[in-house]
Image 1: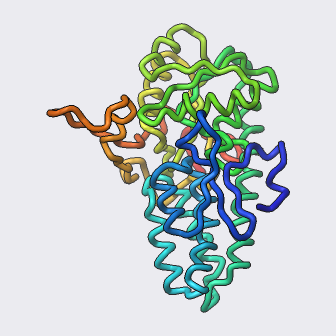
Image 2 (image 1 turned 180 degrees about the vertical axis):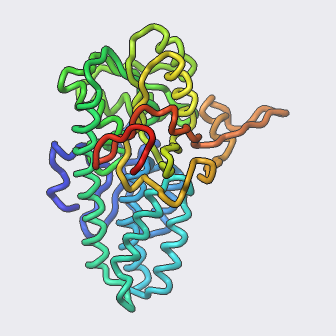
Length: 338
């Protein structure tokens, strides 16, 4: 990896690429163990994205950018075969727009060439990574400045360093708010069924010596009614032109609860997450995952006889339930004009 990335102000780096080997912090193993998984081919990168070794829209995009270099190496620069690999990589997960955005940037970097140059791809991938680091810092500054003083905030899923290339999106704003003394207490949803909140967000906050209380999703309404929080702060995997937001399943219900309890709702995401081709959230494809994940999260190897499950990974929160959307370009309030 470019050594300049691995600096304290850039956050914990969960994606490593030294020009030859791609390594990913295996998020499935956290917080029990910090294990790094070597990725030696584009097929292994696709598998890692699908299996949630790496997750978080910006992190998936950065991983795809580096994986494109592995594909070029495996294909000996053959552009036709490389483009086929890029199509497979782009379809690994359908909802997060950053994946397709990053793959398209890599295609554009070699658009004028008959072959695929690894050095050109490496420059493009490092630029994507560096841009995300800078965007994370800008979002943390803009978002925390917009918070005001608050006794507590609630966040959902994981939006920190391990979901991005830098200090994080929503969690970057939260950490900046804690450090500045604006936020007294952080609450994190467990985030079923993969428990990204209790396994990953709590782990990241603990690494920074920041207190975090984990709650089950069903406790969110009671938390809001108690007056302990003034903001819900989440990330996004895709933002439509009208401000509708696709994010981890459960985000929509939090927005409805927040509006009822007069708790403000902030979405934090880089501008690469904006998708102007989507006029509203109704057009966003929602990824459906194996229903068995729900049972495995409960310690069961398979569904009990006669049981079934529905396992959408994301939902869409209407823009009119969101008080503000923060990108590296600033804070937007409804009606949204990005």
